[in-house]
Length: 357
Image 1 (tube, rainbow, N blue to C red):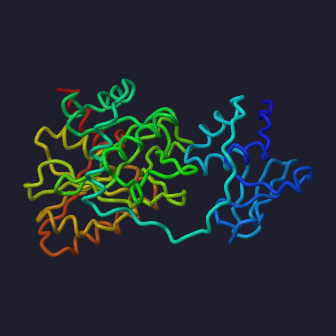
Image 2 (cartoon, rainbow, N blue to C red):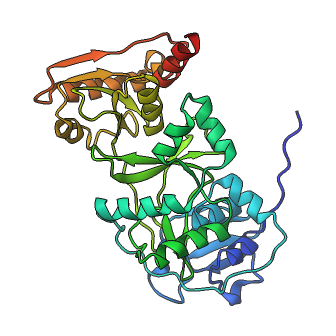
Image 3 (cartoon, helix red, strand yellow):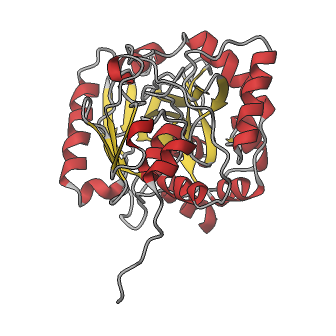
């Protein structure tokens, strides 16, 4: 098979499209110097970012950031590599005015829960769910009524739409500083993140702690979900792997699984609005103990994916979860829910049972 030939995307052109400040004295060199947007270069007029015009690679000699034209654009614009490549292939040559990067500051933490819930709730009211995303949710077994109730929404498809969303929230009186997902781009607020649909991640009281994106196009098939975050971006804030609670919170038995959407679907397909507590990943245990204690449950049923049968690392992580939960005071019973390995997740298994009825 012939090797794939990639189009050349000039690194200097990309740097200009990202608004980087270039050292004009080096523009005719094979190594063009620029101010690093990742570490701030420790002061204006510093040029530690080297742009190799032969290989179209970049590297900061101060902080070590490196990559190529596509990864540079993707990182600065908060998009996937595929989206970055498509944007860079456009013929438009409109560049923002170059600005010196600000010195690197301490990572910004997210706003308090009540503020995040209010702002995310308003944000979801401004968004809609695209037909292809609704079809995806219907195929999982959810009803249109439950889809509407859970407030799934599609990420804005265009940069113009993302800037408009930010402007609407600001016109509603919100300060977006500290809200994960939002960042500034040369003084203008916008929403960062790949295309896909948003999944609200709630606590036991129904407050939205954060949002997770189910990606339309994932570079890694094993990473189809990503937290809405603007970590490391101008004006941005990090996100955390919050524990999601879905179903009837008055129940004393909680099913434990991985992923908020999986929990939403499984709770609905159970037919009884079963209580599901959903961690962000098999190694994301922060907040799990507090959530179970706050719910006051006395029984936990492990309903983790069946890839634990073939993946030793996953199996070890689940054993660690099991040990932690079993040590929680008040948990009187712990059991494991099993099903055929033909179905990876508890949601897949419950959907198969509904189809058989």
